[in-house]
Image (tube, rainbow, N blue to C red; front, side, top):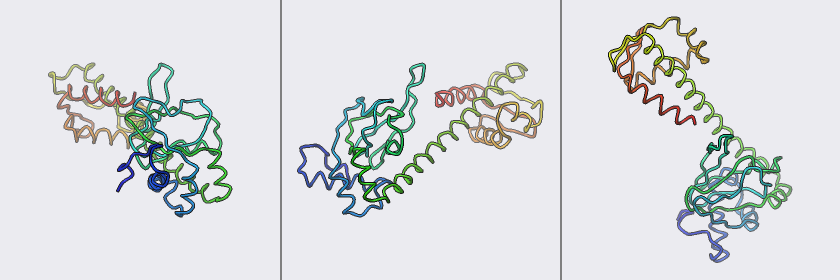
Length: 251
């Protein structure tokens, strides 16, 4: 039986709810190594919360009340940019905790969280959990481990974002060069790089390694081939479409 075999609702018999919440928390990095007795103590201080699709668990700037573990559905944690766009930080799925980092310093949620589909979460009250940490200091180490997982995800996300930004700059530059030289026949073209690749990379605000990675990806997509300083473009429309897609992903 998985955690989603039964709904976690206030109508479940008390002991059934305890067992289901324990299963949910056991899947998370934060509680995975806890003894059954310690986990049961924590679960008895938690409660079930159902969230309809599009409804919020909390908004950015609201006082911290506690953190959550997803039992079913999905929770989108995001911030809203100055121009009103929703910038997704991460979507959390069953067996994942979120917002636990705020227990160690922040007094307000740094982002908002809403359900992307009907969801059920286990709510762990902050004051209660801090009391548990005082009784069992190993929980603090578990929080650090969970936070390191979130940090690793954010680092990978930033690296991916930086790569897409570099791809965008490089592809834009290539298309500008093609248009400036007007040496193509519609779909195909050739370009002689005007300077060594390491200088071109520096000019475009990236590294030689990243430039090589971008060229390798474009070769794999059969959009171009590179021979020394000469680039052969096989699909200019495909290159424009690639640029459109990566710039949408960066928004």
